[in-house]
Amino acid sequence: MIVKTEQQENIVPQVPKLACVVLRFPTACVSSKLVLKAIAHAEDKKGATVLFITKYIDSKMKTFSNRSEIKLHLRNAVKNGRIEKHYGKYIIKPKPAPKTVI
Image (cartoon, rainbow, N blue to C red; front, side, top):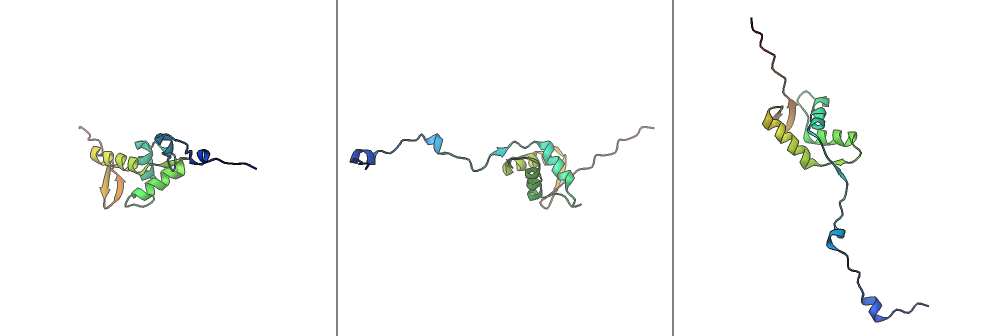
């Protein structure tokens, strides 16, 4: 028979605060090239949505993608002129034909 004293019952293990923070899922670093591949892989002529892009990246990587990082890459690509945004869908801009000098 184990006898517990009052001192043993009142002892609470002290855990550092950093150890209590636990991530739900491991996230992966998403590159801008992978985001552009997802847009190019879209079968819809109108473009790819953010939901389609995240699902595509999740299927290609073993860990879950970070949605805010994907949105950051999309925002930068629109700002740099690589892609266009139309009503929540993203389309890769066609490259202009080179001008021929005669």
